[in-house]
Length: 307
Ligand code: NAP
Image (cartoon, rainbow, N blue to C red; front, side, top):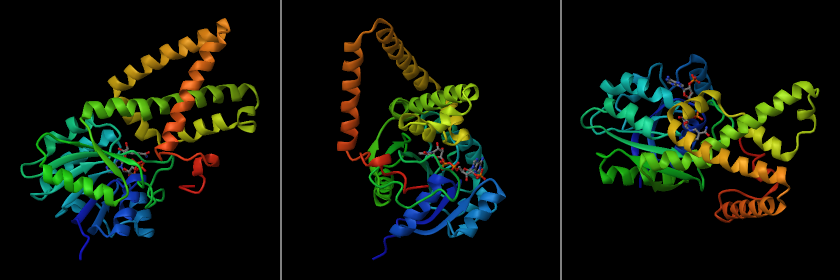
């Protein structure tokens, strides 16, 4: 029996997420044909060389022609312009989805370009590495990770369920959310933590200049983890903060208040406050491991993946 869920899938953008989707789709046999397009010739050449998709196209329009599922896997700020380019070519009955890390601004940018007879269902696979580009993908990326589903208000229930089943086949667990709730949750669990990592590495880099690269030489585990996160793609993360401004600022405000409270505890020698705080946060780490969302293996078992 055929496992094909969508006869033709078009991937717009051929980076970490699209590449991993292509490899996972092939492994599961859920796509009849996978077409792909990326903006630069260099990326398209690499995709061709490593056989990342079945057909690499020279334009986004060519890639989406006759596609049943169109996946926007470009930085969040590029979603609207890409949609403007392809809207006239989308076939009636097609489903357009995206994998962007922010949802409200993507829906606002994309929905005006969704033609009659085409439906938009946003998704966000909560999986990634600090690597990007067409060579970064691997089929296991989504396994046991969450994929948040953010449908447009007019999307058919049957199509939403089909897309959820598609992500399940790629290995992910799915949950539906409104765009606003999605953006707040992601500001807490992903966006602001990335900003903090960027800041810490920036501070250490400034110090490194005056202490003769000691930061790199004596880099301990805490800082090393920050540097891994802070190595994430600058374009993607610029767009995340430009488009999830409100939620990011709200969470950053709370973060700053807590930081001041800890700063005060250090200054006044309030060991009980520090100990209580660190005890509470330690329990959260345990909860994440128990929920199967990370491992307590050395280096969290990441060294083998995506290196
Ligand atoms: P990536 O590896 O940097 O790939 C981005 C791809 O988009 C590249 O192929 C790039 O082409 C292409 N692109 C950029 N602008 C374009 C445009 N205007 N038209 C056509 N193609 C364009 O990024 P990624 O990590 O896969 O991220 C893709 C999306 O997934 C982003 O929206 C991101 O927020 C989201 N996401 C990322 C992660 C993560 O951890 N990385 C996790 C979940 C969701 P060139 O190579 O030619 O520039």
